[in-house]
Structures are given as C-alpha cells and as structure tokens.
Amino acid sequence: MLSRRTLCQMPLLLAPRRRPENIVLILADDLGSGDLSCYGSASIRTPRIDSLARDGVRFTQAYANAPECTPTRTALLTGRYQQRVGGLECAIGVGNQGRYDEAQWLQKRGELGLPGELSSLPRLLRRAGYETASIGKWHLGYDQKYWPREHGFDYSEGVLGGNADYYTRREEDGRPVYFEQDRLVERQGHTTDVIADAALRYLRARDGKRPFFLYLPFTAPHTPMQPGYRELVEQMDRRVGDILDELERRRLAENTAVMFLSDNGADPNGSNGALRGRKSSVFEGGIRVPWLMRWPGVTRPGTLFNEPAMTMDVLPTFVAGAQPADGLDLRPALSGKGRLPERTMYWRYKRQKNVRKAVRMGQWKLVQDDAQRYLFQLSDDPGERVNLYGERAKVRKEMEDRLARWEEDVRAPRLREHQTQASQ
Image (cartoon, rainbow, N blue to C red):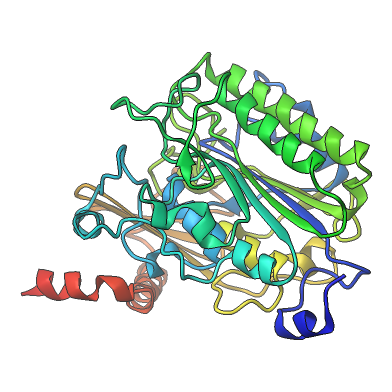
C-alpha cells in the first residue's frame, strides 16, 4: 500500500480503487490503420490484438503526434507536444544522426535525445509507487544519458535505434544496439520473441505487492522485412496474446489496463486503408493509427471511441492532473460519462529540407506539405481527395493564424541559442 505521505505528494492516479491499476502499454512500430483485422484488414489475421477491441474500446479517430517514431515516443512519455523538447521532430538517424538543422546542431553538442530531467510518465508513476519497466524499442537517444533508466524506468532492455536486424540486433552500419539496463548485451532469436520473452519474465517476477507499469514497444512491423510484413504483424499478435494470457494466469487481467497503439501510419509495406499518405507525411495515412484499450471498470466491451485522440493523451489519462501536459485525460469519455473538450490539434514534421505541418480544427484539416497547401473537410472527405484551400479563405486564415500562434508557443528553450545564431 502507498503511504499517506506518498499519496499526498502525487497526482490523483487512475480511478479510485483499493490500489492503482497495473498498466501494460504496447506500442507497434509503423503499423497502419488498415493492418488489423478489427480495422478491416482481410489479409492479416490479428485475433489476439483484436480481443482488446472486443473486450474494451476501439478508437476510430486516433492520431499519432507525428508521422515517425522518435517524436511520437517523445509525446507519449512526456504528455506534451514534442516540439517543446526541440530537435526530435523526426526519427533519430542510425548511429545518432540528426536529420535536420536543429537536430544536427544538438548532435554536434552531444545533446541529441530526450533529456532525462523532463517530467515523464514512468517518473510520475514511480513516484506514485509503481514498479516501472521499458522492454523493447527505445529510439529516444543513443548516448547513455538518454537511456530509459534516466527517465524513471526501474528496469529496461531493448533496441536503442530504429531499424536493427531482427536476428542480429545490429543496425545498418553494423553496430550492436540491444541493451539491458546500462550496457549492450547479446540475445538469441527473433527480436519480437526476445522482447516478448523478456516481458513475460518481468511479469512472472512481480510479487503483487506493488503496482507495475510495463511499457512494451515492439519493433514490428518496421523494416527490415524479416520475414515479411504480414508475418511480422501476425507474430506480434501471437506474442501480445502470450502477454494477455500471462495476465490471466496471474489473475491480473481484471486489475490491469492494457493499451495498444502504433507510433505512426504504415510505410509502403503496410496498409493505411482508404486514407491518403503514409509514414512521414501529415496526411491522414501518416498520422492516423490503430488504438485499442481494455480497462476493466472504466471501458465497456465492444465500444467505439469516435472522438479525436492523440498520443500525448496517454500520460494525463494514466496520471490525472499531471502538469504540465498538452494532452487530455480520456477517462471520462472512455467510460461514457463525458465528452472531450473541443481542441485544435497540431502537427509539424521536419526532415532534411522538408517541413510538413497540419492543423485539425473540428472537421477541418489544413495541410502545409513543403510548398503545397491543402484544406480538407474530413466529415465529407476522410480520404483527403478534395482540396478546398482556394475556396474557404476565412477558415483557412483562421487555421493558419492558429498554427502560427502554436508554433510560437511550443518553441523549445534548448534551441534558443541555435535560433539566435540562425537569425544572425
């Protein structure tokens, strides 16, 4: 049990019960909105992941904070727009490479990664008495000062970067990137199995005296295709099933919130259904993701969640009242007892010379894709086929003004020196 002193010092956690819920947060890598059976896939069978939709909630308008992994993971763990951190608006390149000007500037200073002093989901949960673990893909910094242990994870192992070989766990340049705690280690087998087996060992070692938070980011179905996209997804589905079965065996299922989502849309290997675009774009196909949740006592079986949600909503959903946070607490809407407040949602992605931005305001969506400009009405045009940019000047102007104000608001303090130098 948590002490009275600890309870007074922490934010209100989860729903009022005898003790906080356990949390298993599963993240897929490059899984598209059309890649699960419960989202309409006819070519990929995912019965175990689908069971979360049957027993809980399936989101129909879920968004990643970015069309690539590093920025989305930043938003996931901090509950804030990743732009506030600075330098993490696209995936960190192999071997710790910055891929646009601000990231390159940080790289040269040895500062490319998610700073450990930031408020984060694992740190907040650990302060509240949780045991915390990260098992799987990290991709938030290669230098040890950015590894999971610096962010409040009691235990961690997994892959540091973004595209390691599934059997050797080496990146394209040959460097090994599988770590445990604070050192690189060797493992045998396919990475999906290595990650799942480590998660099962972690669950079996829990004594039940403290709640736990297990962050389980798979590398699948990201490239390389070993053996193939469908096989990677179905293998991940089986291993997610093993995790769910272990929770049942240990009689933890009724006291554990399980969330499954993807970090961005699919690349050309996968499917984003009828949505336009893919990974690395801010069209719907790049940022709309599958998102499922089973939370006994909060969610109701077989429910569709039709309100727009973003990755940064995860932290305030599990840590109510957490400050600062840009995300929203989804629990009232998840339980059917309320609605989410109206909000405007923003995206900005930088890579090399590309700068892509998007704004969603109600059913309107503005896209700035480098020099191209688009305005879509998603209620009538979810596939973003009809460009109304030249026809709805008032709506367009309001959204562009909001975007400019948002960009000013999310300026990263650690980039001030770079911005000063760039303006001279």
